[in-house]
Length: 188
Image (cartoon, rainbow, N blue to C red; front, side, top):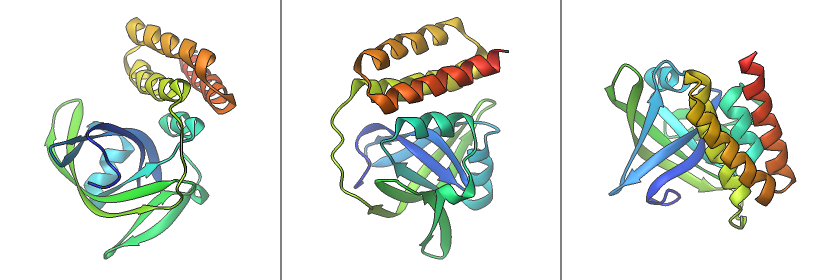
């Protein structure tokens, strides 16, 4: 499936002028997502039926999009067939999908994605950086921590924060500061 590889692909998903970090599961050629019920992403998929996976290597964008809305000027409109979708400015690559809700539970919505168009905007090599990977993991744990305040999730966030401090560069350190600020702000 082109840009997506087997397993869970961490991307920043966009729907109608909305962005959030998401994992796209690719198993046996089928792309799916598990989303929180009641999220803007789910509402937009129900309304519009599309989603764009943005491949971007900026740890600050993963944290920002998890906890706040981006201004409209951060999006670029792209025609995909008869639909106009929004992708993130600055994405290295993007893939537009038709998004179909398969199943809904009290807490989650299961979505199947069908590829419509994908494009590499810029070819850039990103060496493996454990600090970047730990920002992504800490952000995933933080979104769940903000909902449930489970101390085990806070321990995982702190574990990944330690890796960021050891292995990350300036952008990862700035992303960690931003993430910890969001967690502290919501705790008050």
